[in-house]
Image (cartoon, rainbow, N blue to C red; front, side):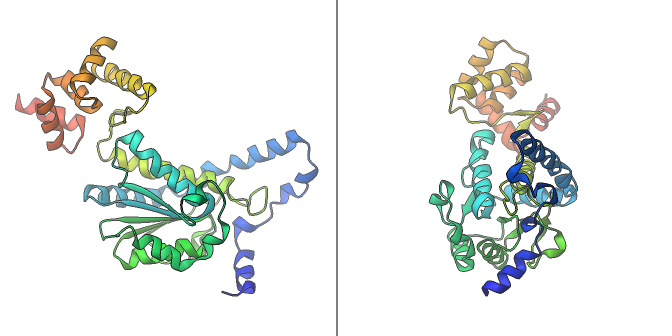
Length: 309
């Protein structure tokens, strides 16, 4: 693509537009700048809310993939790529998921996480190659993240994912009608021009993070990773999380702190099993079997146990 054609493409993007209220931001006082940024941030949640029907469709695709042993692969460049890697990296400690289950690919590789590799986003073929390294199958989901929608690296990965039979999702911050790529679901929150023209780490990045939170949190809830509103598959890789695990057992099972600690130890550190053991009186092997028979859902397991009594 020629320089002029790229210029023309960018000229039509909301994410590259100037915000009329920030023309004088360079001479505003500190308070006015902060208040302006805050006012603009209030536009993010409503923009995301408008996309809920599409977010629901995307969640159902991801949840179905997980149930078939598939994976969610995020692909992005710059801020968008870092957000994907961030969301993927937080799933194992939060939900006890296999690190392979949700993964993030960023243009420029690991170095791009800590130092901008801006030219890497222009490499369509590298996006194709990086996705191929993941051995994508029809059970997987490839989710592109790009505020502008035009990022060649992301488009390359999405089109390769589609060719390999994976489901595809695209999160952009420009109107849906601007899309020039075929995907299964497009999620398009449009919070408007940034207070700094083109600085999509601001409102666009916030909108993308909100969508990612919804996608993985909801998909993991649908895998039985939550009981009521508590994380019951969390990994206890810090003292804080050990204590949180005890608190969850105390709340869910109505037991004392000491009893929760004993249950956690008997369950080999598995919160979900400890809760089921407390509520049913089952042994660890019996609780694990019952959970397995009920796809990891505690409430379903309790109902099954009650029917067998």
